Length: 441
Image (cartoon, rainbow, N blue to C red):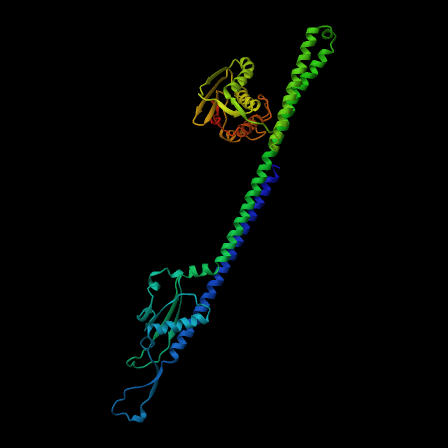
């Protein structure tokens, strides 16, 4: 699994990068195609417009003759009348619009100008042509059509050189509008694939974590059962000893050890079965009006003996003015006992535990503090997960399956309450529980 997971991740990342790259190249190709198509249609429309405008402006003009030339010798010159002076702005615009419509550009806005003598020469007529000079040229498509004229002496209303300039501003927005659905579809499916990728990676990581938790649980369970089984085996062997068989006191002692270890194993089995029932939500119990301080005192009594064995102290301040809650006596006592036992197990030498209660508003609050080993942020975020235990290598100095705090959290929630943990590594931990007070009629 350790080798396969990185390989799977690398392959999936490469696949995603390749997919995104080909999507980008495909969209770029579509963009370039649409741009070339737009330019082609613009060229056709501009050339057809120029041809139409010049068709009706061809005239024969007579050159002024000197007095000494016989009239029959006067040449005629074919010349073009000035388009810029022959048509109104609206007439030219309508002509261009007509050919725009014929070339599939009916929804495209355009600007035009007619210039004389050169492309940068005097503008005889313009329509919104300020964009040609002020807008980024990379965002403009334009085409210049020369309006051909003859050579010779220019007469009134005639011209030698004119140019029709037609441009389409904001070509980026036009192209994006054309391929907008392609972009939206590509982005949508890319996001779907990315989401599937991250969900897959997350699932693999979760399965990897569950596998580690399962292995830890099996190791812990093996250790927890191995110890009492070994003790029972030694006690049974001792009972078979001839010296012990005739000694009632020693027989009773070893029989007591067997019974205690049997009870211990039964409790461990019960804890595992209880966790399974909690997962299936098959544990049902009624919440009855109860004085919380009495249940807490029962838990305190249960912890006194192991506390004395570790030379620890327990400071108790039951300061809640109102301790009436709806609770199940057994489970509320158990969750309190689990928190006290947890504080004791993870404490250093001479543990100091502090338990305080208070009633704030409509809630009964319990706070349990210790001076134990504390937890880092990662452990703090995961302590309520079932089977999770902080990694301590192969050292099993703290017994358990990692089910205690998971049970506590579910029992607190079953009492419609909340639990919060705070801890500093090396300085201790603090668990705060808040349970709704019984409503008074």
